[in-house]
Amino acid sequence: MFLHAIPAIFSPAEAAEVIRLAETAQRADGGLVGGHHHHNIRRAEISWLDDRGDAAWVMERIVSTVAEANRAAFDFDITEFAERLQVASYDETVEGHYDWHADIGDGPLARKRKLTIVVQLSDPDTYAGGELEISFGGTIHTGGRGQGDATLFASFLAHRVAPVTRGRRHSLTCWCHGPAFR
Image (cartoon, rainbow, N blue to C red; front, side, top):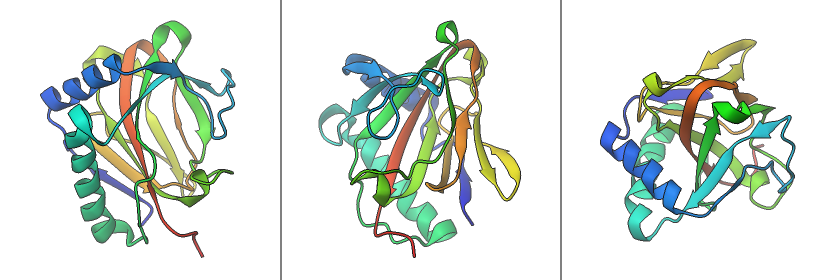
């Protein structure tokens, strides 16, 4: 299995708190692996949460969720969480989106990505569009839209965030690392 959904790993109040933490952090224009910026591929504002301090509980929840899901659905060799948590904001005013891509890339951390977890932070009634779509087996699968829902998938799968057509969508992403696939 290369795709797994988990409903409500955060309550609506916890999801709102993650958004608040991200809004108090330094924000930047979302780029691609390697730090390149191509607005025709990605239009998002991102911020990074540390695994210590006010956001430590967020990382603890992600780690325990990934450990359980990995045992149940993937059985990948996960050895570390080498990157900070990323919160992305996709806004209708800039047609926020992230075109088809895979999370494994050329770079010391990106080439070690094994699993990606994306958590929906926004109330689905506050935005339109912005679906997380994952291509697997010739079929497009859509990630959970419920506030606090998590979608885990193998980092080599092509996926995208469709353009947001109304409002603003926030999501949390974390990559789980391990030795190269064989």
